[in-house]
Image (cartoon, rainbow, N blue to C red; front, side, top):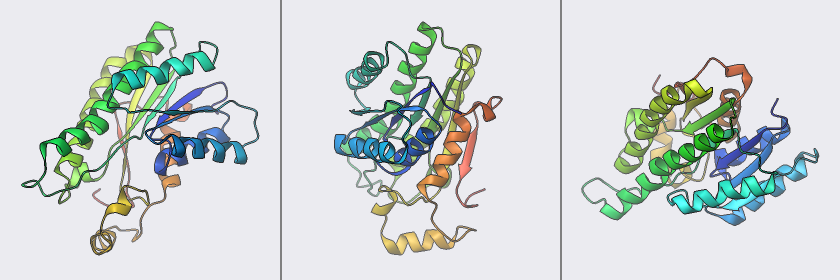
Length: 252
């Protein structure tokens, strides 16, 4: 399905990013895994190369998505490693938490979460779309990752929830602006998925959250990955600017 396509996945070193990298690799995409942890990115690359013997070239890179220069180096590396071709699929999975009650939350921790989760998504999407347009590529797809917390709110996560709500607003605008270039931009909104970020939630709190999920369990990264792969694929060719909730029925 994704043969001859280059897919850039930020935050691809673990969790949902790793899951979607594996799914796309099985569909013959060339995967560029960009993560703040180069070890995590390398592990994802090794995983997909061990499971998918396709001869397709994959790439692992270190990135700080909150820094434009760092992101520019990623896009330059793609050009250099793939014969001046550009990525035509983008998944913005990079995200962090810095949880604290709002009255105690530091300005630094607020700014850092916004810089990575929202600004990083903006800058990666901007660079991706610029390269698509400059190279006259007319079949692009971007999937950004929000969170059900942006819809529900979550105690101790005013910075995180604001950043993810911002990702949704950014996506709606980008979808409208990029439609004339046939670049689709959508959002996946995961619920409580078994990823490193969710694993920071205290078990008592997590148990309470799970009790409110109609399916009565956490989701798996692969379940979100499949939804992302759908939105990247030609099967969703008439879908843009939408939010696909993958939450086990929570907050429908």
